[in-house]
Image (cartoon, rainbow, N blue to C red; front, side):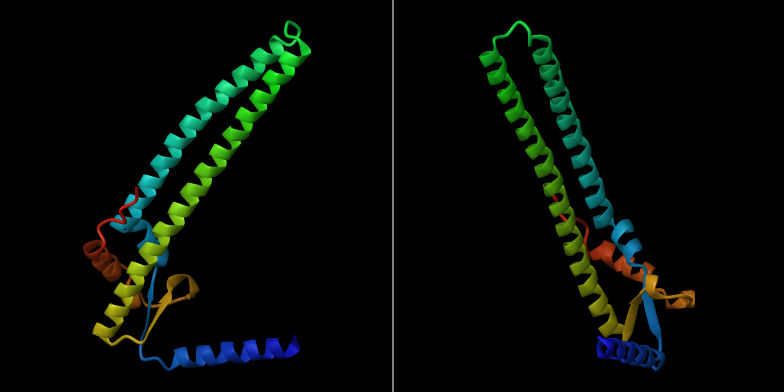
Length: 173
């Protein structure tokens, strides 16, 4: 374990050593690229709308299940034991299906969000690679890893402009 820490520390020092000899190190704000690009905004709006509509449907269905439960409790004394058990089991099955629907909606939205993010990151990566080659840039760092830097070294707005031209939409459905 001690050797692993030493190797990590040496690697870290060498990495900073290499950065210090780079002619100019540029940086980008990845959150801004993801959230303020046309495709990113469109994807966020689409997913928010999908969450809202899905939540409304589930809320209505949940309220119906609660009403059925209240009705069953009210009818408990008038129903026979077998009929009550049968109705209770049906209500439980409906509730299980409801919980599955809720889980499936959450899972679907999470999956779609991850796919949209990956597609956007791939587009950003190809744009950054192309931009680096065209402008003879050696290093681009995420802004969150920088303590202080000259704002002239920020490529975020330039990359955002290129991203908006090249990627209009992520075509989520």
